[in-house]
Image (cartoon, rainbow, N blue to C red):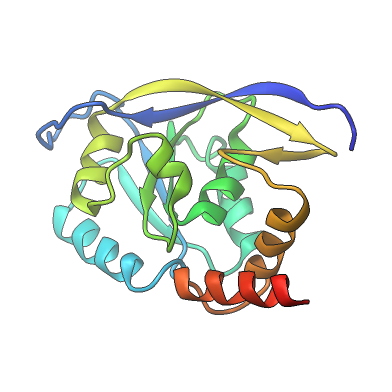
Length: 190
């Protein structure tokens, strides 16, 4: 393993409940990048809530692939956005965040994945409406990230057995905690 270096990423979070306002402290504009394949039903719930809010200064772009998601995040600044919001699970957050490190766009997180470990660690609400409020009304905070072998680790990283199971999980089509447990048991038996 090569040496690692630390860098900062700005993440929007809020330590208290706030009321949704029409003029947001973070100003925007906001680009919500959604992963429609994340989790089990969370994205559809988010989309319904997002559409009903009729937010000004906010756009939703659905990613069609991992490469498309990364491209949307890279192009966010060129297109005038101030906040890039990852709507999905840990993989979505990791992918989008990796494109924002070292820049001046803030990362927002709406957890719609199966685990949502990064969002939980940052005290981002698992309730989608509240998470949207946190993005719109929260304050930016810097978090540390590391680079290992040229790859960013955002929120967590694993080696050995843990890394192997994460790799397996990343390469299956099904999501959810049950699939993670199933892969863990299979990996343990092999």
